Image 1 (cartoon, rainbow, N blue to C red):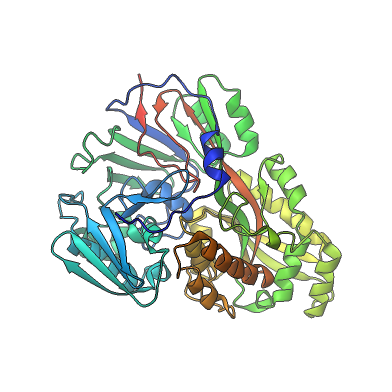
Image 2: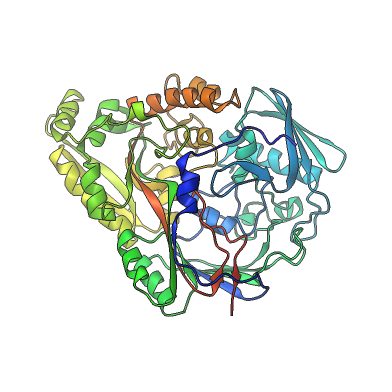
Length: 509
């Protein structure tokens, strides 16, 4: 079996392996029980093609198996619904589909269903991930268990692209039945099936008794309690109302470590706090304004004030543990408020500038926004903040094109070419103004020509330099994945993507 190139993330695998874990004594996996998870953000859509937030993945993973999976610690591609795959030439990828898999509604998850899904994400008017699979020119089936992808150009990132949203298989029968309402009536082939969703309250899943993996899942179900305030969510775990919470702040992690009978975990991630820019319009279309914002930020102080100096300062969208990280590109925007004011003056804003900042209304996001508002003042930048729930604000910024910048995070993707295409490509959903950056499209294409990591790293250096030189965003910090759960939760392992998956989780007692 050829599984494409190996994606090895240097020291990150070792760091994950040595992540600080306080565990209850290991037990043999057992069946039964409902895992109760405190989730701080409501899902934007249960359709993997139309979602607007990287946080959706936590609730999508149980519902949808992907064509290809990734190793939790290295992001190396591994089999899932595709048992094997092979580039028979630079523009032809053959997938062998696992036999006897069915969706939750008993529709066969065969080659025709896979073709349907890939055609859907390429052509569906509401799809936000067309850029992910733009390299695909045509799809054919060979028998019931093989799919051939004919590409417009070489794309060695495609296997790991298919471990993300584009590879999440939905039931063709269900999508034909529900259409746009599939957003809230999901049917996949994952370990869990959909039971109920209540806006800003809860999401409920039950065990998929037709799942293709014998003996899986261990859990009878998962219940996501939607608690936007992380402090309240942590208390719910400490008091036994819930079992598991993720995305804790460093301050809350310190409290969790003092809790009785709690297991805590801290591990590195690709999760990057940043300011997204709508650089396709108004003052944000001027690179000097975007550069001024970057110079106005004191990232070290931001880390100390918001994360107790526990996160990694971000100069680009890849942390230092990543194989494509380029140390030569660090330090492009040191804290220099005088330089920020000079750039604004060059852009015609001699008396400073007022910009609209979008932010989420959870406590941690509000704290980060307040720090940035104060820091920006010294650089001549006044920020007017609008805050709200994650789905609301995300939709307003990326779809409604409201606001100049969004304080949020990029949760990472298994292959970095996907991150850069989605965020900065001319057709990327997270490029709200649809602005095209000279040279970027060709540079992105160059990252997908070879399977050799040294060749790809050189190509990514060019991509990252274009993004940094044009100040297409303002990276802030790389978060650690901070998790707490009670001792009943067994088998959970962190992932470098920083998005909790419950594949191997079972409940003891």
